[in-house]
Image (spheres, one colour):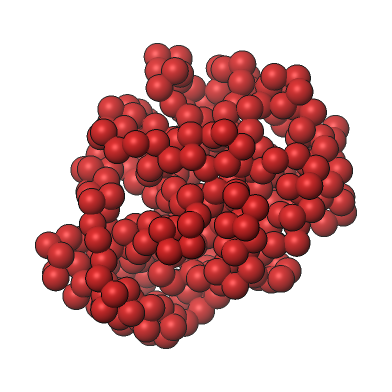
Length: 331
């Protein structure tokens, strides 16, 4: 891929599409290690060099997996990881920690698992409401001063939390769920990021697979954490088929796929708002990486964007089992 890099914020340049590493842990079912490594190497080969992980994914095993790629290709990768969650995506989270002592412990553990001496982008994964966000960011800023971290990011914060954090230390990126069927961040968080010059990294840009039209919510495995998300409940999933139908229709007009339309839609939002937007779709299949990259060359017409917006207005169900877990529940 020869597409130019994207400037998120605070001098951080990354590939136009990133790779969400959570898919390579057993949150959607079992994972084959050999296939996971092949997928990661293919992503970097294709120019998808902005790799996103977290200390919580697989109890640290996701970072260890990515370390196997980094030991050969560290200079090619823009590495992002996260701290603050205690527990696991598959079994549930037991706590959120944003205190300085925990942050120091977490970054050292991540550096060891990743086999690197510096993290390009270090996110607060979720907000610890017991700790003022300025204190959390001050502790994170200390990691920059120590050379352990290059840039700071925040995940699922409100507009006010972002503004407070940015006043302490430049924030390079906000990572929150954002897609055609998850648009609550557009009310406050997205405008705040645009006004502050902070990049936006949408996770689950394909609606945790639903927007691809290939996921049957009724047949999710027993260990698939999507079973806990209201939007994947039977009634909501059936009601939301209208969004997929519209995406298929637009995709047919452009000889594209629904996944490419979902990503192209997000990139169009960035252009409209003057906001650096770098989606991080995850996958276990190498051909899906190539498919996703096809979104970079798509141009949606005004009529197509209006049709997608109208379909999005009819989405049913919350994106989180606990709204307070995400920025939507705290705005």
